[in-house]
Amino acid sequence: HGRTIAITGASKGIGYALARDLTASGATVIAGARDITGLDLPGVTFLTLDVTSEPSVDAFTAVAAQAGVDALINNAGVGAFMPVEDITPEVYHRVMDTNVLGTILTTRALIPHFRTRGGGQVINVTSDVSARTFANGALYTASKYAQRAVTHALAHEGHAYGLRVTEIRPGMVDTHFGDTEQGAEYKAAWLKPEDIVQAVTYALTAPAHVRVDEVLLHPVIQDVAY
Ligand code: NJP
Image 1 (cartoon, rainbow, N blue to C red):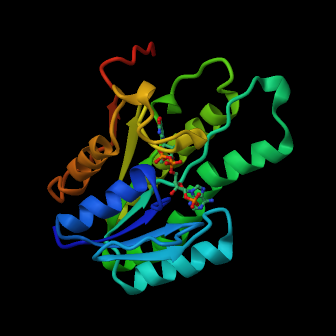
Image 2: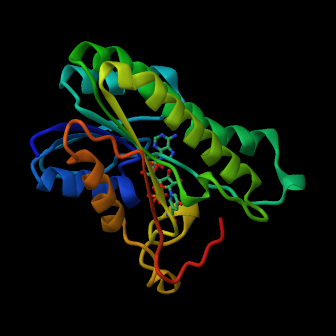
Image 3: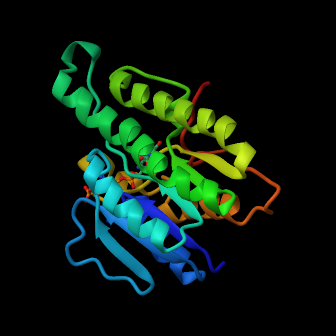
């Protein structure tokens, strides 16, 4: 599908797999992360991007708009897990600024472009915990609940000018998330980044009159209660 797609958090994990596999299936990709040292994929323009920084987001989205971006994938995210009593303002801002403010800043910057071109797609990689929580998950799940709210509010606002908004909600994925090692033995049965690529591709390739509101997926071994 010969579209132009901007992806945040694309230096590793899910974002890197999206950049690699979407270009392989014919897309042109503009990919951002804070550290893009040594990254090189055919068809992918890697740019330095910190989604918590307004000037950095504006530089990234200017390149994307110039390239005629059709879809924005907000994938950048960080996790931090601790009991409520241990949450500090510093860790609060690191998680909320990346996962919530970051999603807002990139999206906000591209809305004028999407309005002008008569629509487009915004696909936000949130989490299965965007609507459930657990001990030590207060901060991370608060950020994902908030990111989910932003996603669905945007769907209400954008449908009038043809914006299609999708929330992708993965369970446990074998990535570098939480500073863990990709490919670690205990992650053998988890979702693979490629499984998330498939879910995103479903939303990207849906007919123009279809909005895929939400995709929730888990590894079979993960038992969750909602
Ligand atoms: O994690 P990881 P995932 N500005 O750590 C980038 C969600 N999720 O692929 O900036 C720009 O391998 C970072 O690059 P760098 C999760 O919440 C995951 O699993 O150089 N980019 C890297 O490329 C997140 O929203 C699981 O450090 C920033 C990327 O983000 C999404 O999936 C489960 C950045 C993270 O790669 C992708 O995470 C779930 C910034 N300020 C949801 N900060 C799971 N893995 O189990 C970080 O439910 N990045």
